[in-house]
Image (cartoon, rainbow, N blue to C red; front, side):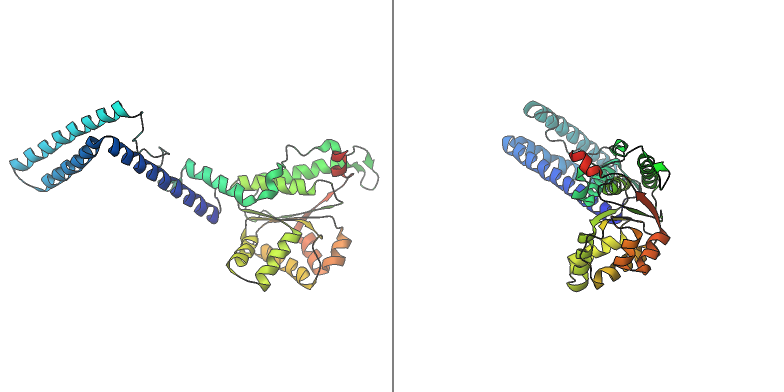
Length: 325
């Protein structure tokens, strides 16, 4: 699983902080133990002294050196035994242990060059944070209900809304399951309340859980962030714009609800064109028809959308209203 670089950096930072916190807590417990048992401090000082003596003996020569090494070894073993007895007598098991939280990698996050399970779990947690509050509704492919769509035949398309939406559901599920860099783009379009946002969020959640970086933005939020990066650039606004440009998957929800101006139209074209040239997938949902998109954004944008995106037409009655009823 290949998590985005910024996600791994944040996860490694969390792991390092957790390790530092544990070491600080261990040092605090040891200080309290020294205060309670002064003899324990004396033993630890003596242990360091015998270890230093043994190290010096290694570089010495002759029978005296061997005798000194053996003496240091015996003293060290005796001190260790006394220390173990004192700790067992006065403290709970493991109270002064300094064993790492992860026995597999020793809290380094890696086993050789392979990312350890503990770091992978932290990456997954950071990835969920990156997905943001939009994914807290729990939208998934599993809870997308087809029974809200009519099974009656629609004369214009000679099939039912339920059949169309089942195909859309399967297409979105397969898109997320097989997601990779250069996976292509989706355009979810149709009237309000038909489940476009639900499936867009389900795609984002599934792709994010696979370790890819995902940005979800409503059209209003997207253009607001890009406008700030353009007209009031600073470290934060530029970083936000860069994430929108370079994330593995960008989801733009409710295209057409933003305030329309000359900047918006050219900005949308630049976002679409830039991500296409970088082969970074984008999912767009909109309530607008193809004619509505042309009227709002012009032929140049719509040509890109219908030429480079896989269009999924959402049909049926307002599911949102049915849920309320």
